[in-house]
Image 1 (cartoon, rainbow, N blue to C red):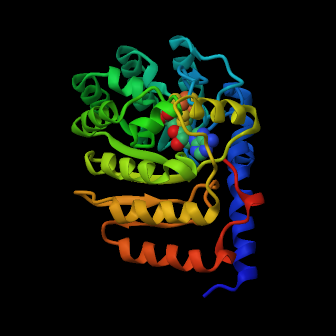
Image 2 (spheres, rainbow, N blue to C red):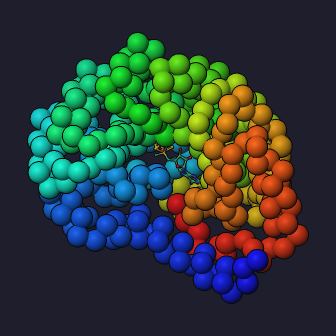
Image 3 (spheres, rainbow, N blue to C red):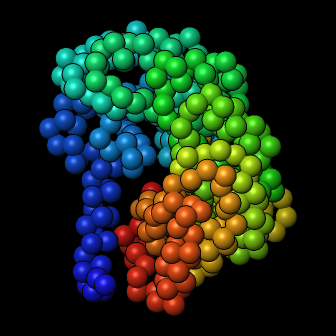
Length: 331
Ligand SMILES: C[S@@+](CC[C@H](N)C(=O)[O-])C[C@H]1O[C@@H](n2cnc3c(N)ncnc32)[C@H](O)[C@@H]1O
Ligand code: SF4
């Protein structure tokens, strides 16, 4: 077993690496070149698993931008980049990084782009990068719902492989309170359509979103939703409210009844336990809580590793020293 000081050093290292990745510093020369050549509009976000991907910012910001908990793109005016500019950037990057294997389409929801234009972008990417294996993007629920099965199948065939989708909660009540712009039924429909089209789906859930009053409703609704869809990856994040949107979050939550009382780490562990107990996937589901917002990092495959994950959670509930200190957490 690792000593506490070693664990702390490791956590510190992981935290620094996460932030360096977020800031793009870890790419070193590659990022400098990319920033100059692609003129990224900051802040630029990507999922942790896209650390080695070449990022094309095909849109800037989020076309929705109203989720009460999310401050990621609040500083940006949404815009879709001109198609000619995107195609030109692909040609330029192919000269500099011809061996690129993975591409991530930023910002918040590339699926807002029309299917014909996305198909042109995918064609150009696979032409320009002969070793390209995967193209992925975030997918906002409302925009996934707008695409037909035929469109999604075509996108899949042309090489869009993986989408990152924010479920956040499966409770209809909580989805309204966080103004996610989606209902559980619409999300189930959209996710099943995407999996029927052959897309790999990585979904996120935010622990703590129901607060002290609605936490059971939050977890039970979320487990029920997950049990009705075919997703490949599930990640839990821990609610981390940026001061910029904190007041708005509390006000919107309270508008529908009870006020929001935040959960502490011990309660978040209980949420995680309840979720893992209740998620019964039909096919193997890769589970992660390794995002920098989490107090406890976990990884495994459900249902296979359920007992081990629960035992790690129970141990952490008894010994708080294994939790990531709050100063090391972030989004
Ligand atoms: C770019 S969005 C995901 C893709 C897409 N825009 C969507 O809404 O489905 C990034 C994800 O980060 C997570 N996130 C955003 N703000 C958060 C916060 N304050 N606390 C915890 N997780 C947060 C949510 O799971 C959110 O879906
Ligand atoms: S969670 Fe996704 S859809 Fe909601 S505001 Fe953030 S980026 Fe936009």
